Image (tube, rainbow, N blue to C red; front, side, top):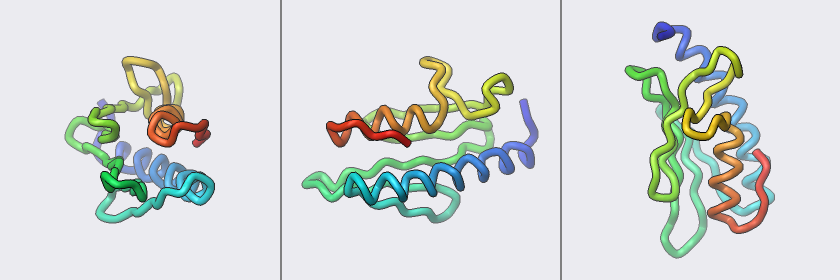
Length: 110
């Protein structure tokens, strides 16, 4: 398992890239992206005030996404050089694309 410093470095880079891309996509699909306290939140202007939360879980060296009443846990993959959801093999952007597409009802590419 990677050490905490290496995890923080990889996680920060992934979050920075993801936040930039989500803000671009959010403008097109009418959702807001907020970042504070080391996490990202996607807020939808719907009757349920739906919110997706993306946050690092440093003790287990994973990025966790809470969305669509599910918790997605992505670990670092050396072969993919990305955070990956073990169950599907999707990287962080692919998982976000899938769950945003499901929520919005039209194709979203992160």
